[in-house]
Length: 418
Image (cartoon, rainbow, N blue to C red; front, side, top):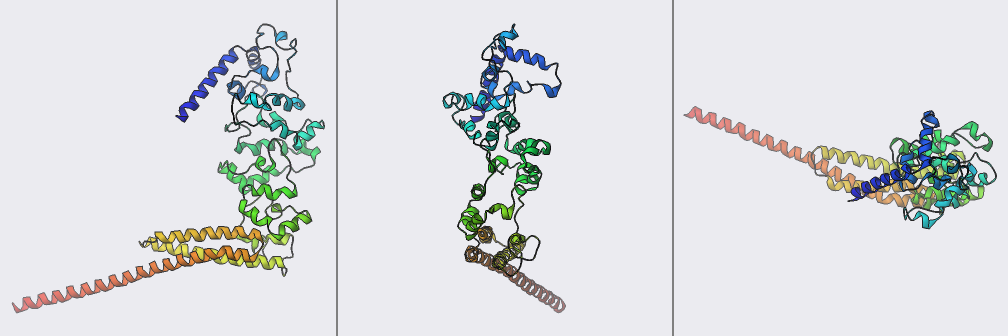
């Protein structure tokens, strides 16, 4: 039923837009003009699929003019007081906001659409600079496109999750364009190598964060020190809860340090490993702020790493033994529940290091050690039972063989007597 409704809406929208366009002088004239232009210079590409035209709006709703004046271009445009023509960049928020800030108007098309985007935009770094007269900053069409605007959940849209990094990079990755703003232009290159970038761009996981998930979209701002933990904590809830309750949170705020970023970075965040806690290695993350040897940070890191390493080794040992017992045909399905409990505790223990408290790490790991011990004991029991079965089978085979041999001798003796 849902698919039928969707198809019905699309078909109706297409028919509606087609009917509107057939009666629109703007559409007819500019379509003809486009035929003499190079493909890159055409302004009507994908216009038939534009979300605005799909719901029955016309060129005049954005550009003004008289779309019924087919035979008089002056009456359609220059002699009409409502005609705007090409909307200047500095006017785009107000022109788009004419509809997008009106809840009653927007509710005609969908009840879920937000109407505070323009209000947010003026609080963004883009909006602030635009008000100061800098027209190089992003405006509505910079991200959404001009004609042929697709809904944000359409994979063809520049603001579809997997396209957002490239859309932002079209400005932020251009060193010449960004020169006057004195900010880095390698964010996209770093993001591509990050755990977030690989998940979004390579694995097409649209749940992975893109630029707007951390910086905001219409209200985009560089996150400051006091909000970084909150931004990361939007997804990493348990990490944030532990971190903001730790002594390190308050110490970092006093120092002006950037909390999560100090250890994990920002645009080039790599998948964290246990190596970050290994004192004496290049990956030891605490050494960027602390002395490498002999201080409390190194001692704490070693203690936490010892607990995690011990639990990890025991988990892997139990896993291998259970899998081995299973390959031998033993029933071990119940042991996988203990193994899952152990794996879950290992993940939670790795998360618990954000408390920067050894007692918390130990307490979090305790259920994992117990579950691992149960799994290991069960696996060893299964293997022992398998070995005992082999011994019993061997004894039975030897006994059977002995009986067969004795029977053969008995038969031969009986044959001799006869």
